[in-house]
Length: 93
Image (cartoon, rainbow, N blue to C red; front, side):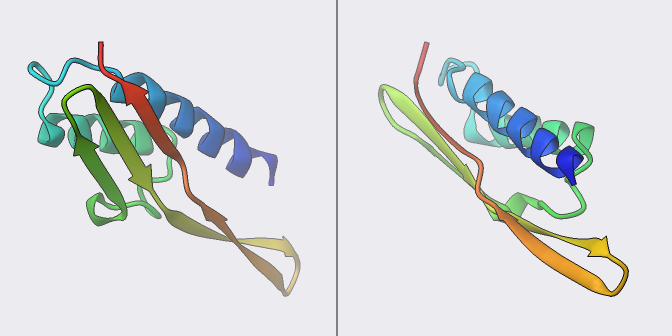
């Protein structure tokens, strides 16, 4: 169960890093590609698709909001669905 939270924390940390990138060099589409690449790297791309993330770039900041769910079998015949909502709101560099 710990790997679920580690993957989410690492993914959220990368969202903060990506959200700071220059808006003139990095369009929202390019940012989305980077977000999905990191989701693949963290092996959460099965749960997170392009429609589950929203990117809003303003004059001085960028917001990235994502949401996904993972169902995990905690004990035999006992499953739990964890809901994750990693997001970032950072000033642009």
